[in-house]
Image (cartoon, helix red, strand yellow):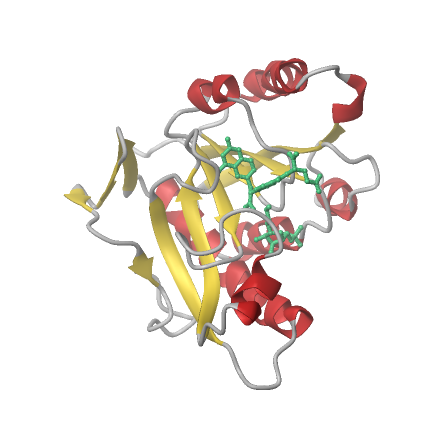
Length: 223
Ligand code: NHR
Ligand code: GAR
């Protein structure tokens, strides 16, 4: 029996280059998934234009119109739920989500974070990696839990920190890798290879002991 198409809703706040990478991967590869809607808390997010250009509804909810986080999060839930998404993908979404939102989408909510978690949770990760003198930096895809950037990590990709790097050159190196790693993780969801049970990730029905490190794979190969 053929499995149904994975329904995705993407949340953004800005440029949406990760959204674009996903749109492109879905168009180019045989991934059984469809982005149903893109939601932004910023009216001028370029990602909304990317969505509309791809024929995907690009929706805007103004977080400043709500007096508290819960009101905004409830409005997002009310907007997202009619699309019946199998997963919610945070792609440069910059608002911390309430426990109510996270619990509503438990096991279906993922984020890409520009550091090798658990290093450098929160913001300004590239400068902090430089300041700490780390020789390796990168990005992590994780399930969102109620601990900010603290949910179980699915996959990571590393980049070397070189002598000449600045926060901006590091950002560019990392985001290029994000565009490879995020569509690949979403492909695993579409193939039903990933599952969260409590705080444990199962990959191909086996407990994942540590994040999958995708560096070692050539760009063309899928796990
Ligand atoms: N929500 C929960 N509950 N858990 C996580 O792990 C989340 C989350 C919401 C977003 C992305 C995250 C990142 O990858 C993310 C993970 C925004 C902030 C932040 O401080 C921190 C982490 C992340 C996203 N936001 C400020 C706030 O007050 C606003 C900053 C701004 O608007 O520029 O929400 O890094
Ligand atoms: C990405 O580097 C993503 O990892 C990061 O913001 C960028 C979004 O770029 N996310 C966060 O910092 C979340 N707090 P994009 O809009 O071009 O995909």
